[in-house]
Image (spheres, helix red, strand yellow):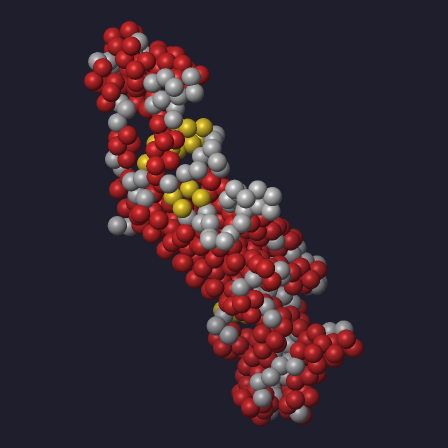
Length: 437
């Protein structure tokens, strides 16, 4: 993973030493249960845990040196542990296959990663909620196709983001549950040489559920769903990032990323304040989404197992979770420090001469007895004059001066249709739906 986009807690999950520690726990727990069953001496599990209690140092370099000869990582690890523990270590891995260790370990790592990501989402949701409440009634223009549509509030934009990431969190909880399984079923998953109770014991100790049926691997549809969920979260991150980038454009400038003292936006142009954080988030989202596709391709393995998935997961496990962890933290910072400009929002609302109120006039004309087509034509012919004047003309004044409109609507009724507050009468209802208060 690129250190620039990595945070310590998530990175630590994927360090070789952390992986080997999980391997040891799985092997030692399995040995203890096998001892209880009489498959191996009870002294075997005790010897492993006694060594672990007194000398829990993993020599990664030594294991790598053994692997350079054996060309097999699990065998290299078992050989190294045997050198540390002594003869009792020969009872490790009885009836087990490498995937029992590798797959269970990967799922432990993904569960740990999910817990960090859930905490990240909680932080992000708290920041979004604070800004939503702060700008609950801050008027701004809603846009469709990038064009002024009708008024909204900036708080509603934040409420929409909150609801979206709340859904993301719910999906991640489900993905965490689905990935949290353990398989200690031996070669081709038949439990021929390892009792199912060993799997149940290891699963309990590792905080996992048993895999109902494994082949030689835990089914990769679970992993595909996990990484697809990360990809959806990344897409939601990008949606907010793109919104901020648009709002920061010079012609809009309704909000912008915090620009710290001493920060420089361009090597050539001293005036620049660029949305670099959200542009960076867009790039990270592209990368996180790209990891979902190989995870889906991993589902179709040959027969009971091949290792085409292995190299893929060595990439996507760390890269997807580390990048998403960084991205969520970065977006939280962007939202928390986002500079919001209500005056500019109002200026942009007023920029097009009241065009944003056209629908209310249209509806009033239909209610006054005109056909919808006729009502649309009357409003549009005046609206186009305002549009072509670049907002220099007033839609309100043009409508009041239009004899056909005035025949159907008194001036005071037309004026009432330009009341901005009308658009916000249900903001409380929406907030109650989103935030539950």
